Image 1: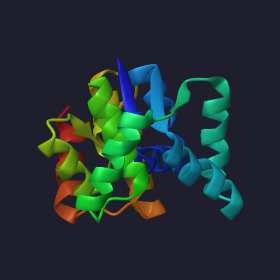
Image 2: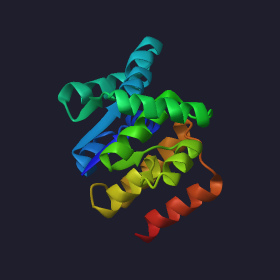
Image 3: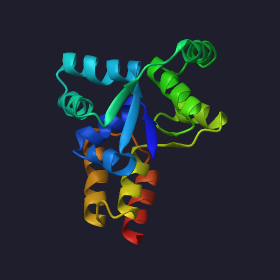
Length: 172
């Protein structure tokens, strides 16, 4: 199974040392050019260590950059004109997921809501952790540690959602 990812799941999973979960779950992850620019180019310029981790994944070939064709670029521009709260990377990821009919990995609520109105299946960083637990890629303790690490690193999440996810982990 393939997935298209926006910046956020990549960054957060890299920050907590769990980027390999994506490879184990999806084998290949595609990112649009703008996500590459945000995560790698800007990340390296800012000195973020997660950018180095993600560049290594690209160099190893399991995270791949996908360029939009002219029709996709035009669709992306239409999205940007009508949904001002979306960033270019989010719009490109939505277009690629829609065009290829694959899962979209995205954390931002506005982008997720927009993608879902297009009928896309959208999941985020927390889903990756829970699915990894369900598929026995990680155990309960690793899942719990990943959740705590996300919060410690500044992942924005409502307390009620943290409670729900930790309960899901415990009940698994």
